[in-house]
Length: 267
Ligand SMILES: Nc1ncnc2c1ncn2[C@@H]1O[C@H](COP(=O)(O)OP(=O)(O)OP(=O)(O)O)[C@@H](O)[C@H]1O
Ligand SMILES: [Mg+2]
Image (cartoon, rainbow, N blue to C red; front, top):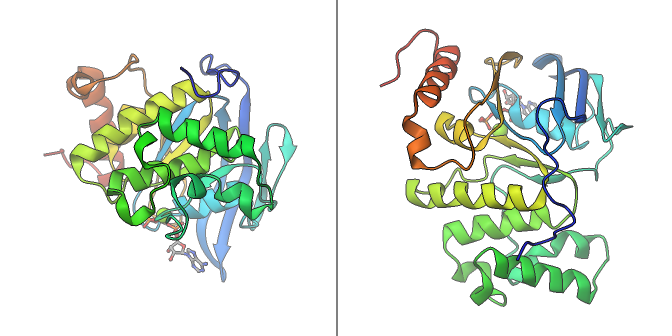
């Protein structure tokens, strides 16, 4: 059973229309530049990762795309609509997003709707279906304290997807997980992405994770951030552990690491 069949996957390759468009977006805090003028087109239904050194402006860029931060210059368009500085047009899982401890799994998934004052059986049923579909069927009425780290991350992610926006921003969603749980989460998120046809923009410090998940990896320079590489990840799907040792994977990994760290050879 697919979660919401009508969403379907919409990604038809790099020539599909851009759902997110940034034009000359830059940002300064107190006169100090964090983000250089940036142009970026993100194709509908694609999975795009951003990598770059700590403090280079990745979360700032997400805050601008989400409309939580008015950029110093430039514009953001989503689905053809100018949404610069206007929130409510994307699903956004913030860095270190937390569950609300006094709400159950279903209560957390439907939090966005509750905050907007919407509460109906259809939303709750949809949240229940989603939790069941993605392996939390036995935990619908559990509170976050009774869940493992990986389960909590899944609930936080479902909460983001439940907002029903076509574009989903995920800021280091798996940062706090051990390697094994992280790998399980990566496979899981690929399934959700395939099932729902959303456009996912993903921030990570893990180059393997970026390549494993994405159609495209964008590399940012150290602060002030600017795009220094933009890579089309031509790795077949579905991907598996063996993808991590293919020549294409190794080549792209080497390319990203040398951009991030100069000409150092990865160990
Ligand atoms: N509200 C703010 N006021 C002033 N400076 C800020 C503010 N938010 C972020 N900064 C600064 O802007 C720079 C970019 O921050 P940002 O959080 O976007 O980095 P990042 O790339 O997400 O880093 P990390 O990988 O560590 O999460 C940092 O130097 C940070 O200190
Ligand atoms: Mg950040």
